Image 1 (cartoon, helix red, strand yellow):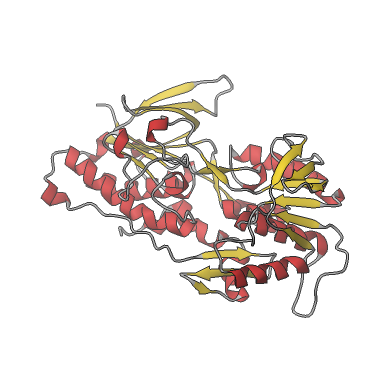
Image 2 (cartoon, rainbow, N blue to C red):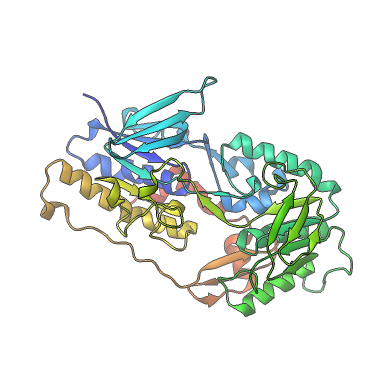
Length: 414
């Protein structure tokens, strides 16, 4: 008898967590559990803590590499072999009408595509960053290559421009400022002329627009102390050469801002947001912002039964921080469990009602600035710099990832 495939696309927080939760709490309670197989598809053989990129890209000495990058497949050896399969590959086409997904395998020297028919599918493909330095946009080998190129030119850089006043841009500028210009302390301030001037260009009237203005001002002070200058209400209009910062990491760039200002940094890092990884999905299933149109049960109703999305790629969540993604997993999996049981003939009364996700829209954002400072809010309350350092600034959440990758995070059904 062939397997009923439950396919999960994406090897980061959403995808790996969903796979562990299903294998622990859903597959074992299905009437014929041996007929189901969870297939986890990811372009990379490793998972990583993407939030750590602003610091990790500077040097391998910033974090223990065995904790920063973790092999995915061994984390699932704890489950019966016929219940799980890891596929290193990239989804190229979702045929939701015929319930198939096409995957280009990344482990083959000759281009090879595998067609997988699915009983259920979860899209957790996340987003890609504009700069390849700031995310696992492809596989771990590509990211290491980009970091190596960046590290080779960093020691000789005389100026750096970071485009983007959101958390990634500010964290990147802060880490580089401290690394190149020295750490600020309680009784020290910036030198009149930093060794490497760093400029942040933001289109907004303040950096970190999700935070209240007074907190953004505090962030500016911390950045100033490590040699970072802010240009507000301006955007990068043109970049020469056109691939600088994206396809060409080690190229000097000429940037023309929309107010006519010209900047000529030795290093240019565009940190201007992310793009959802949905190029393989029919546009009829996407919302206006390019994410998968998902309701608050995490179902993609337009795609037919047992098709779901979770994480950065889903449209039903505004705040896509890791803590929010993890809060979604029990709700998604409870609804998947219900749908799978209903398919086997269980009565609706026996499987219970849908669970519905309700997002907490109070501001929760922490932004480290270097290795000993930071700003942020939690559930709308301002956090002191020390707490931002304690929770995130020490290691950019690396202390939280082991339980997620191993599945211990989901030891209990919730």
